[in-house]
Length: 217
Image (cartoon, rainbow, N blue to C red; front, side, top):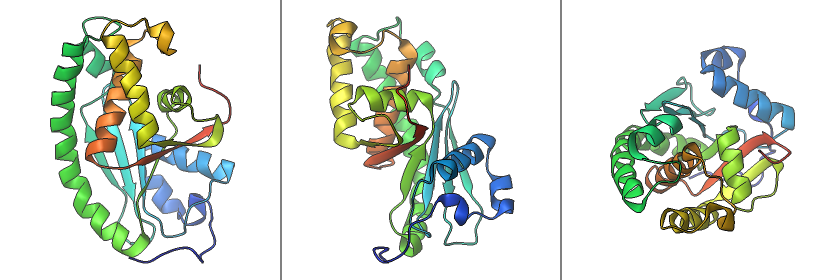
């Protein structure tokens, strides 16, 4: 696998041709532009997985600048609102709600992983590890609650996400949400559950959240 320790870092837009940007979903093009505006550095050939959690779907746009192939879009039927409405019987889910939701989400993520893995193997062979990015307000909120300082590039690691999810389980078991500093909002719990399953089963160990220099409220 090639290394990039001696290559200059540059923003993703420096390696994106206008035609490639035009082929991206609008949210992914906005994320690339936000990364460019913030001067977010990446290795020139580094493959990117751009993540968006919507109300009804989760989307992952896969793009490898070192290859000629176009960006590839994965669409999972795992939106924040849809997941909360289907599996959570109250604003704060019960342990059974969480268990049922996790079983369903794992199945959907496994199907996405089967599509992602062949792409990632080729992309990583020529460009190095895949970098996962998002500009979602919901994920910026998760990063902040996990203790990641507000910044143009918030870096949420798997272990920090797991500690946040453990706080969620305490609340599901009856601890007041306020005592854990968590909102009483079903979509928040759904977003954290979705991110956890994606990080574990795609898998990836770090998520960069771009363009949020102030805390999300």
